[in-house]
Amino acid sequence: METEVLVALVGVGGTLGGVALGQGSAALMGWRQRRRETATRWVADQKEQAAAILSRALRLERQAWDVAAQLDQEERDERLPGHGASLLLLPAGGIPGVVDEIALLILREAVEDGFEQLDLLENEVETYALIAEPEAVTAVRQLVECLWNVYGAIESFSTFDQAADAVERARSARDAFANRVRSSLGVSGNVTTDPRPRRDEEEVDGR
Image 1 (cartoon, rainbow, N blue to C red):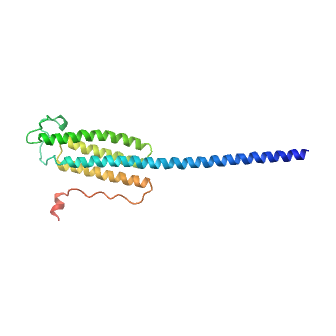
Image 2 (tube, rainbow, N blue to C red):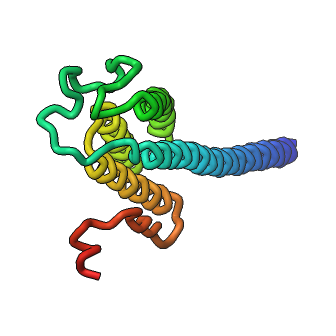
Image 3 (cartoon, one colour):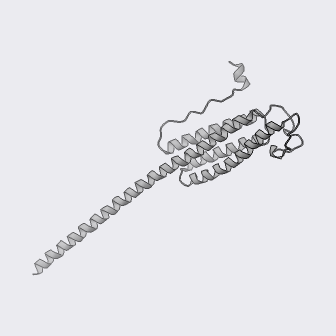
């Protein structure tokens, strides 16, 4: 009788142990599956956020190039004589001999839109910073800083070359960010920096 009870207990214990082992194995597999799904979602989120940031940055660059033609190359002690350092504060008619009404309207609309887009970009960057690698976050914040400098140059009615140089620095920062994102996602190779849309006088003379 005792032997039969012992055998029964061993059988029950083995069954319970098997159930526990099976449950533990299933739990481990479930945890691993959830971890893989979470990692996949994070990668997808990083790609989506980075793509949105790059798209907005590119739009800001193109808009800046479009309006840079309204800037001149005149050397003046004050770029906006008698009106401070912001074209947003100029009278609607502009400044005779410096910036006319039409050019002022184009520049002002570009700056106001640029500032609005940069505010949105900063919000996107802070969201991206929650899921991205530190190096990518550093790179994208440098990009945002460069873009603020671009629109600051336009707002202050800097010379064309000063604004163009600022845009080119932003372009390089955008490419650096894109390469950092590619690296974090395991994509091989780097994005080649776009060629300059203009050349220095020294380069032209050296043709």
